[in-house]
Length: 276
Image 1 (cartoon, rainbow, N blue to C red):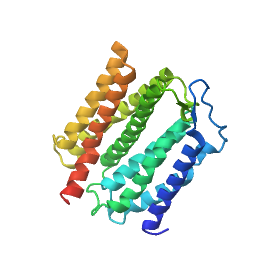
Image 2 (image 1 turned 180 degrees about the vertical axis):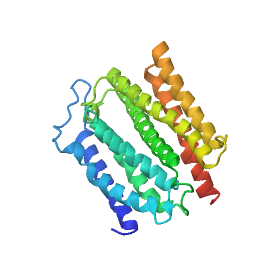
Image 3 (image 1 turned 60 degrees about the vertical axis):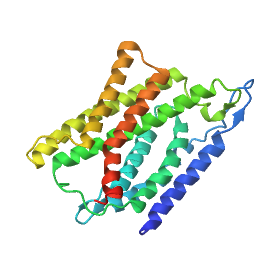
Image 4 (image 1 turned 90 degrees about the vertical axis):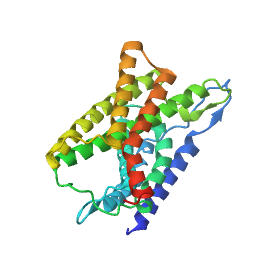
């Protein structure tokens, strides 16, 4: 697989998986009858691994060059989605929630093509520094967990809305109760918050190690801190005041938006709009 072919194959495979998930699960039922999903084959949760493998191959081709790491806005978003699917697939071994793949797979169709559409024009500087590598890994893992949390929150909001409608869907028939989903959401956010805290701290270490100066207060730093405050407030509100339901969903999505603006948004402006 060379050039654009690997990206196209990954996108096509993700699209096929998404179509398969939706066709086998999204079946409406009357309110008077229970929503019953079709039996799930044992191999079905692992279908996502085929496009994930091709995605990983094409992503590696775009990221690693002979003169350094090419992490542009396209490859950054693609890497975040790749890690989100990988982390979720591993985590879904513990929780019966494979339906989230119906949202992750369509997102991955676009994400797998982004490195080809928005390629990095030059490698990142200082990629040999151990502190930078550690910082970058933490940041990508934090983004992937918060991506899962955001999609999880969207599903919770959709489920709550569907509970009050006349028709129900087999799409959600294998989901645990909303309260259980809520507890899982806060576990994901808690893990992501730890990684985000370490990301911000390692950013300070990286700045002092490479440049010999404290962390600069930039647009990226500002929105990173804002997202950290939002998620910290959400976890604190949950613990102290029992925040849940729509409040939890709104704060989760607000924190994710701030996180997107922190890194992806700033890179998009610099690379795509300003052409730097």
